[in-house]
Length: 235
Length: 235
Image 1 (cartoon, rainbow over the protein chains, first blue to last red):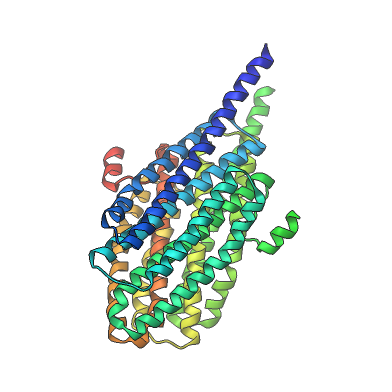
Image 2: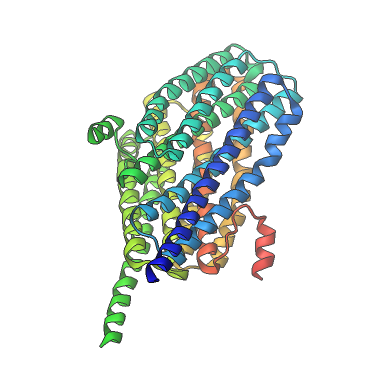
């Protein structure tokens, strides 16, 4: 009889853990959608879509607060240990990064709004779009690595970040040259710079999520570690 | 006898909790010092000090990982609830922000290094210094509010942020004008912009810490809430 009760409690507990994992992934999906809309708003010069991105950020904030509360409740009531505890810590950290990525997507949406309203043309839109697509894939892959608790996929996200950083540096250098050649372009070039910066930050935060996946699976904190050391250690 | 054992365990537990609180405050002190050194490096044009800031960031990263591990260990072994649990969650979140503030301070240090190496003169240094002093006070007050678990002090930090944002906007506007008037100044003006941005972010993160203090004391999450609503609710 007692075993059945234990079993019953533990299966409810598992449902709760599965629940916060699912909620975190849904929140991740919402951030992906915000980012995709922000990038589409730039490409298409779609003012309505840009406004929607700016006005929808509160929904992501609300999800963070809700999931955070669920995690704290589970910690208090279930007093989990080992892998279960690591899952909850992973979720708490992941949703913090997701919320900040939502802020960055909102920033890109705000720029899209500015650029469309002042009908700024820019030959740099395509580059921003490319950088945006690149970090969108990183975010998607990081969430995928989390969903499948796949360390190899997580490490690939970390590798990808070097390419994103190079792409970002190239855009910045070109924009600086462009600003110096045509000082009247400075205000709109700065808007594009801030967006590039926001996108680059989304790449960084995708790496954070990938690092939490490694921590969750291996119980090992790899933040502030050289990628090559991590790969050696895991082989 | 049993009561004595309980008492003994609970006093050891309290020591552990006090321990992570103290460690978090020490880490906060280290970030304050990094920020102070970065600002001094700009004011004095001190290349050695700027290098020291850039090279010392790893110490702050190490503190974050260590405190994080202690928190996870306490969660697993002591299975705390209520206020004790909130303290640990507060510390976990606070040290994440402190680590990122360390990164921002490092960024300012890197700019100081650039500016001194290329002996860039700038009439904007004083403004950066003022903004830096302002956010240094915010960080100090946020850590103080955490040390004394003082909600009023925490709310004052949140209020201060509006003034920092205005100061930041003023600097940005002036730099844009300056860049348009003298396009050759663009690269160094951008360096100053990134620093202003880094400092403004330290102000934002000081607010995060202040919000965690309110959460810790009242058990209420005030993130994403209008400051006026929070003050009404607490009165």
